[in-house]
Length: 619
Image 1 (cartoon, rainbow, N blue to C red):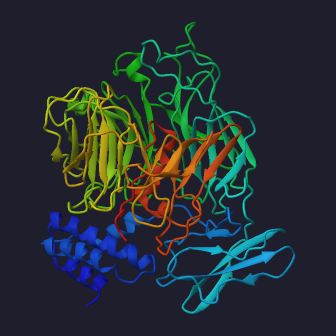
Image 2 (image 1 turned 135 degrees about the vertical axis):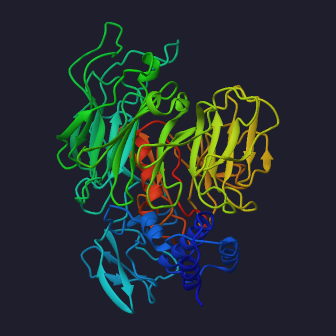
């Protein structure tokens, strides 16, 4: 009996929910390998999957869960990218799509000048979705294309692309901006329906904070603009957020997503009217709206009132706003709005056309959620039923707008949600608390129940600060490593997924090292101080990429194969750094994983943390 058949057999036979969670992990891992064209997983992964199968004493409907976990609204093309490397060769990378048949392989073509396209592959590429053209002509115009081979038959080629222009050996793609300024945030989505990702940037790169203390709040010098650019770099449209939106990330959330399912992404953002500024520059009054903006034209297509300021306390508390996208019914995306972090919290959910679904106010139904917000709002299917819940930090709201669990420990600065520990069924939540704690100020929770799986019990914590890190950076330890530190640099914590403390020193002197899938192995690299570091997993190695004057905005798989790109803000440009390292492994495009895609959608709202994947260990 194959692994897939065995998984289905046990899923049909068993019924308890705890085992069902284990079954879903095993089935997701096996399914990822099949979709990637691997067949059954390698032996060490089989042992891990078998352990989950043996632990299972019951199961739920596995196939339904698998479908919900991997479905995505977007219709993507091959994402073909060609980059000239320092030695003159050309790296070519493309997407493996969820719709590709098992055993999919690819032929690669090159055309020089006006000549006929030449096939570079004697046998179709089956173990990866990249190729290095070592014999690429050094001069002249080149274009590359790939063709799917399925069932022994070659399909039509994708649209050809030319190697991108950059400094010799530089692995970035340049999109010139209309205004020669840096942007602050960027969102990604297919605005025109051509299967390629387009970009919406929010500029200028200025940030004020609602906290009324010197060094935090500053008077806005000019309004934010949201500018849209096509994948080819064409300027599409501009939305002026106006003086009613102060220029800070907590005032101006936005998401880019195809929520209405028409094949083109919309922009959802906070809006206001006129100029309600007080003489000081504060905005404390005036209408506020959730706007739906047409991705093709930039015109407002609908609006509903933003959650009220009432009942949330003073200015510092009601000026903190978030947006997220969640598949609340397991079938279609919903737009979720949150207002508040440090006091009571309002949350409202809307359908794609802004039809109201539910409203939730902690003061009315769940007062224990007061002061439980984080600096981001994340959608996650915490109970593996195919429907996503909302993790706000120290609490979770279910798909119906009801309180699910709450730690009652206050506001965490650090919040990651994903499959962190492969030996624990279901997802986990990694938290680091800004609020002082006598114990447990750094902890890992079961995402379904909110119960602590492990915690730091060695003494008090005072202000665990910034964004921390959660990623698989050390090959010797199963699962993702969890890292954070105190604001005053007095303590640092590095944990293995299972709770073993691995270190008490800073990683590269940073409280916020980002992680990125960049090279050919399953572990992520560190992105610290504008450099991608290769080495021992803790940044003690050489920089394989130096971003120079570019500043990282977000990490996501937006081009080429399954490795991630680093989308950066450069004066007058969007620069998208992409790997040119060949690999012999492949995965389905990460953006076609629902958990990953909705994580990426939050890049225009709150703190950006590198996205989590629902099956990060499926190798």
